[in-house]
Image (cartoon, rainbow, N blue to C red):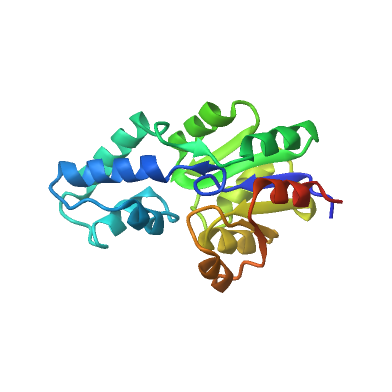
Length: 216
């Protein structure tokens, strides 16, 4: 299959965002007297949207001041989301090559939409033309809605489109969108979790992923 469109997850796939996410989570928790979380804990909590990230950080309980904690997290993250965040090695070059080859690209994330768009522009400029985050009216991953919306914006043919992600949510999302899933191992989940979720095609470096995406 000649690949003409690639839909990417963001956190753990294109960008290593965990440091800034952890800092924002702990700001929200600390501001309301809750114990802080380690980076590894936050890593395990991400994947199903930022509201669930805060819920898990509060031991799964929607406390009376949950909305305040969540609001403080979002405000802090909006102002500090590019402090520790970096693209994974080889990702920017991969995106440049895909653009040069005329391969369409998009980001689909469960992070809130404004942050997804801001991070895309900040780190990738015009390399990725479509970036979609969590927003009203579009079911978040693993529902296929946001992936299908990105494909529509790119006028993509499902027969030549693949999905790239790093988590069990991404594996399920690709399945629900009827797309092949290319799973990267440098993100927020280990290989055993990914394999148990049904992942089959693993990539350890951006160069390995590039080779697969450009193969006929």
